[in-house]
Length: 183
Image (cartoon, rainbow, N blue to C red; front, side, top):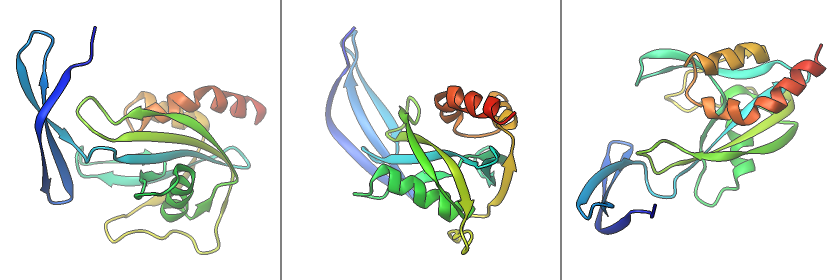
């Protein structure tokens, strides 16, 4: 199988804070098809599975307007232009939860979804500690920080109670080792 051939024109549209990229491809059957893809090309996001020294997982509980429900999510967000991934994820953890990462390990990356341009990068942080200044939220962020067990985090990923379950799959082996070491 070969990759589809992308052909011009590419049209970039802004709708509020969302970017839609219109792409055209020649399909394997020779026909041309038009796709509208969310997010600017090359967009990066970073998230972190963060644990305290006593192996509690730090989650950002927040309301999500798409599904109109609350989720216990890993801290994370957009990587700014020119920002290193680890710097971005440390910044997001601190801003959203008020915790500083101790040790940090890169887990990997995955596409946002089949119709998105973003790449999501995931990290595992251990020995996280509260920062004296606490959270530093944007005007549209309303986050309650919770400490949950590793088992609850895994259950949240299995049951669709978070938006980054891929991070838990990438961290799974490490989480099980940490959990078993906590007994």
